[in-house]
Image (cartoon, rainbow, N blue to C red; front, side):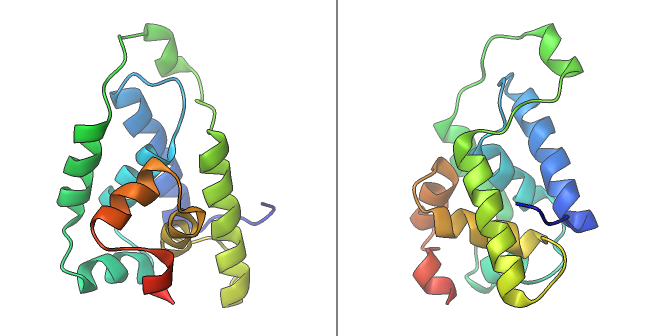
Length: 139
């Protein structure tokens, strides 16, 4: 994935790190990225895709929070940059492909959502599928 993120795309990744820390997780998973997506005002089609289906971002966040549990506190986590899981890297690679397909020079918020949907197997993709959002529905 050798493509820069838009300002909002970077904001999603920074917020995902914070979400992982909020749960005392020592990694940034797709669930953290999806929660961050829901908390970041979009720069295009991603939020519109969700809102067009009458899905509230708060509902997606609540669904994720029911599925994951906090880990015991670890003060050392707050001072380190958490690694991305393999699935998170895969969704970011998919997001870069979506950006290239759009002919854009940056990965935006909407591309991140498309990356989650394209990956299809992660916790984030499963949550979105529970709301009726799948890759085929976005084409």
